[in-house]
Image (cartoon, rainbow, N blue to C red; front, side, top):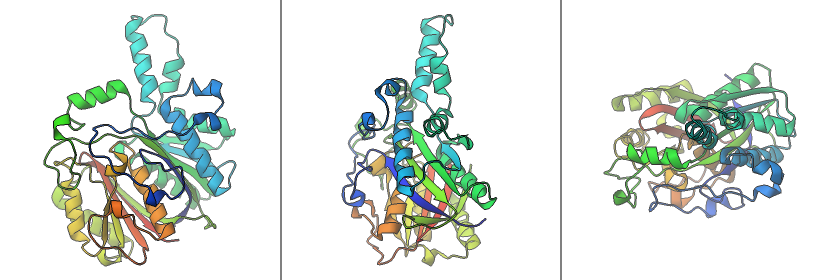
Length: 353
């Protein structure tokens, strides 16, 4: 499959990623078990009457997608593809609460209609009056990667020139309660989190929305070349090295060719061991991590992709993301490795455009 280009990148996250000087203004968070996204003033982008009917993930995605399209200079993309793990869980909770409170009678369909996972892609299309290919991927932590793969296929097959690709997930009160009960989220007694050398289970949970315009042609705004993606649902720890080596070999690269690797260390002692194996395989690379900035969530890889795009374009590695002391003078190849609780492993290779 031919490489495509990431021509714009926009992100709403726990960092102030909509503003300038992103790489210089990153602030880690390790003392809270749940961190929320820094939201923009939605009234500047969405009519007030519509804001009331939108869930958080729809609002974040509407603004992030608008930023991405504006930066790429595109009014209507040839396709809209969104990846999400939990979808519009706020409205899902409201609908289920209505079912219980009303004893399954006299229910209005609004919350149910708005709770489906493809609501985000649909709302963006409605706002743009875009009748093109519209698809949503729900594959836990590899939802964005599947969306990128689809965008590559659309472009390579000549179906599209520019594709809006996004990822989004929100927090909801009831879901966070359940995550605390099953120990997905760090217990308060295990805070602050040591992301790189954790001895306890659980993660700091975040949220956010990241959107990119992927095109067949390089432009003045191009951040990076999206070269290849590899996804596997299950992986044994001792298979990690082979998983990465096979991917690099497929792209005619060796471990020494990777200038920086961005790893998804989450502070969960049980699943972070995969990333330790990856570091051992890539000793000459700059080792970076990112979930101390964004938190863990189904589509946290959207934040790491956004950061990788800026690292490649600005040729600058933020010190706050560095695990080792290797700071390359030139960054050509960036490898992103992520999974969620040891499942759905993904590798993404980005190159300097």
